[in-house]
Length: 249
Image 1: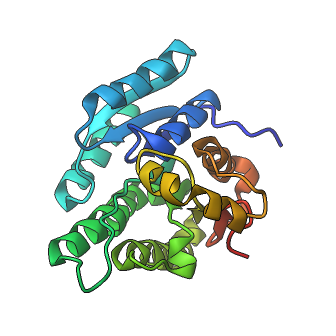
Image 2: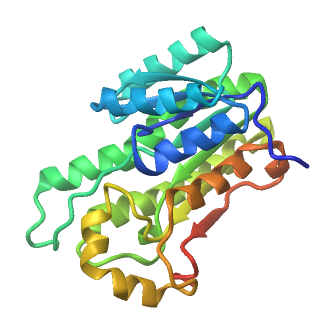
């Protein structure tokens, strides 16, 4: 079955850069109309839209702080109003505030949990209302191998990403009977703006830990997201698939 997202409407949160931008581009290339969500970097989001439209795809940028419950709900209502449906939600928005627990501030815990986990719940709740009426839909949560194996100095980030895994499995059980799949992608070390500084410091050690002996790319993650969003993945749900080159086995 050919991987196509023709006539589908997709929302990708945190899509102005990195993995989110790659997913937006790949989904548009597969035929989807893509809503490129961003929080603050309008210029970068508009560039992603321009990249997509220059290749003949369809995309719009939409500002929203997805950690805000009411704002998320309003954004998804607007998507339904503008496009008549919502077929694919990719919960990708995320941030880090790394530190050892004795030095981590409460606000750093709250910010990471709200940005990474609460946002996924906010958007999934609003999107599920539309998808359940359609009796079809795809929700894809971008978690992390840190949510599977943990990572010292990232108690906030790892907890948020582990929470996304629990959200994925529970929601898959809840809304599967309505024809909606819910899956999670767990990237390993992928070179993005978010990880560039960390990777530069420990790049050789990361590569040594990875069976494929290379770092991941945003395109590696995006290719799987497109597949999970397609009809070809219609019987796959509740799964957490690592895109980590064999780092966590």
